[in-house]
Structure formats: structure tokens, C-alpha cells
Length: 117
Image 1 (cartoon, one colour):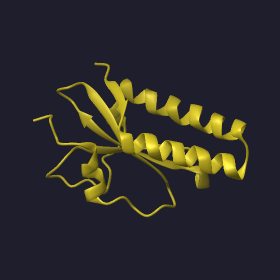
Image 2: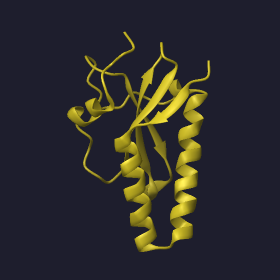
Image 3: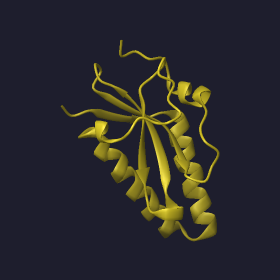
């Protein structure tokens, strides 16, 4: 089954912020390459999202949130996504640099209500 992949407003904002930060430290070209690469990785979730582990921050009484790691060493990013099986949907809710503070359960809930039941 192929899943539809969508980005939440929070994830879009975070991707923009990260790209702007990379551009400010390097160049537009580097930021553009990063953005293209992470979007390519996110797109792979359409094929096999269950290959990613459940996010350690996931509260079992709420959404099924999984974690896709993108990048290498100190350039690794965490892509948090909800997997809504019945809807055939992967919803990316947050994108974070690995060194940022761990995401809280309340932030994971920002993706929307669990409509997979």
C-alpha cells in the first residue's frame, strides 16, 4: 500500500527555519541541496513508513508517531511523523536537528487529533 505524505504547518515552518539557518551560515545553494535531500527522504515514507521506529517520545495513549533520521553525524535531522493506517496517510508533524531539545508529547499532539481509530 502506498501512503500519501503531507506536511503539517509546523513541519513546513521548521523546514523553512532550518533552510534559512543553513543559508545564513553557508549559501543558498547549500540550503537548497539540503532542502531537496530531506524532501526526497520524506517522500520515501510513502512506500514503507513502518521501517522507521516508534519515536521514543511517543505516548502510547495518543497518536502513533514514528521517527525518520536523515543525515550523518552532526548533520542529522529527526523527522517525526504520524502514521494513519486507515487513511493511508503519513503526516510529518515536526523536523528537528538532532542536537535540539527532545520534543515533548504536547508538541507531538500538535499534528492533530488521532483519526485512525
